[in-house]
Length: 162
Image (cartoon, rainbow, N blue to C red; front, side):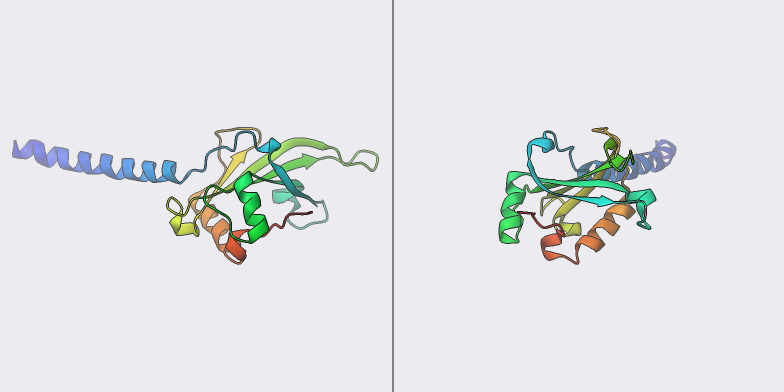
């Protein structure tokens, strides 16, 4: 029995460590913002080929906000449940016009002070292309998102274009 326990203890320990790290990743994930295209369009920006970050962040940047997030744009304090979407769309130059092409990524911020307390109450995630499940973001990138957003009022740098 003692030999059996000595064999099983490391296996049980390994399973616990793996399950805790997996559950932490799942808990941190921000859900895909279904229906965001019907939310309020906050503004659009364009990162063009002359920008030094064009390869990683070039394209149209459309920002959408749910109803709760719109309260935050009006007051400067975003309530729990606020969701902001940063929709990055590629483009191509065509006879002086710049039509949209495919989606590069979809970045999402969700305000939940309990769940995301280590990042100022905001969860950050990034979905690849048109996927609702494939994610580009890592924990290290989430920390970078937080560090950059922490420089702004309630962690949001966009302003509603009226």
